[in-house]
Image (cartoon, rainbow, N blue to C red):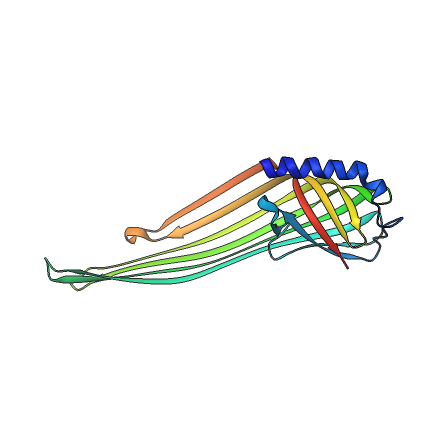
Length: 222
């Protein structure tokens, strides 16, 4: 995307000119926490490693642990009534949806090369995800027709994610980073339901190896 090209060019330029812009002689990270935000299109801030929380804690200047948590929950109830005047009957339909998913990513981060304000790093760690869903549909009309369909689903994923990047401290408690990540994930899902009064069960197994585009982030230390 265009904004990523612009941001990457500006980031590289700042790395070269940063010695003349240094806000401090050195940046000590030991014992510090940081919240991380991804710089998205139009330079808006969004989640970096997780939508609920994305942060890290530095044990020393050379090592840190990073945590990202995603959580989504949906609950909905919908009803619909239809009158069929030509046959003098009506139909009442209802739909229910309930789903929850959670994904957790942890990484141990190493800083093998440390300068005053520019720090290269790489990291690796596990990821795990769980999901549950339940959907129900009921059809009922005054002509005596009744139908009920229910479906439940479960999902599980586990994998490992590695990343490498560079972090530039442009202020004492603020930094910008550019990072590339690779992930390998195994996922399993199971769906059960009773359409047309029959019991149907479906299972899916998947393995994926993916590389993400370079992502840009802002870290706030405290």
